[in-house]
Length: 413
Image 1 (cartoon, one colour):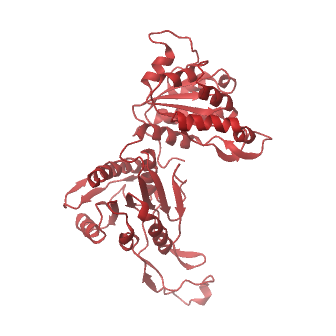
Image 2 (spheres, one colour):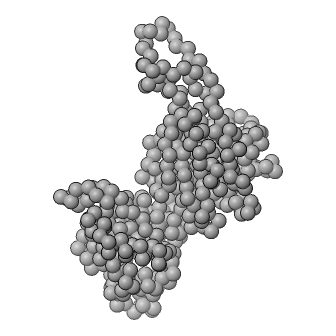
């Protein structure tokens, strides 16, 4: 599911989105997609094929978008309808995209409104296939997808392996989930030349340092900030690797997620990958200490008298200790969660860990820090200048961080 409640925000806010819906059982998911894209601030024009109308009703889409549903190819109000749709669109998405649609789109057919709109647009196009697994595996379907992706430059999102229609079992052909379609649309809207072809490494979440097989030392980090950064970097066109401690959040769509548990695990995972990364963002709340001796069996209350003493030893510093592994010319962003002397402590961290930017926030401030959906951060850079941002959602903070990182990437080239 999305990291934060839906609200108008980048990159969807104020954008014209054409959502084509073709005739498959997965068409019901398109209703949620249309609603969510509208809540994200998009102006959504839904185009239904004749076969799609067998599965979902126009009235439903009108109810969730507040805009009329389009079905008729032959309309001449001003410019032809397909020309106006294609010209005005910031992105065109088709979800679900059936095998029949893929064949017609690959052939350049113009026999319905959505296929004709594709011929008339220069906007990015996102195709979300959905069909039976045997159909998806057919060589002709694969040839059509290859043509759409590699010849026409369309973005193909999905399908995934999962439950298919009743009696069809499980297989590869299931439409991706609505929130994933929305992220794919967001990538169509947000791709940035500064991030295209770049590798981004993000650390996120807490680490858990075991006392025994059932207890650990950790903190309240949910990973929400790092996950938002990773997803936003993918939307901008980067190849993103997220090294995440334990988190209940869904993995960001399109992102290579590496699950770790302890600070030592995270250190190894980062050291192995950071040499290929152009932008490194260390947002994880890594435990500074771990138990010196982790027990192999559960510590029992009746074995401990009145108290338990846990001897702690220092963990590796993931950002500092992997400096030598960094790619030459890479940009490095750190986080500083502080309870006092915010800017001074952030400056000390910037210097000791050779960061280009530190994102600092006050753990005592309401609405910031762990276990909340918002954050108020202060940017601290090498020239000792600082900028305090207003309270905003962590998704919005992620965009601000990547805006600043973008400038640093361009400066480093």
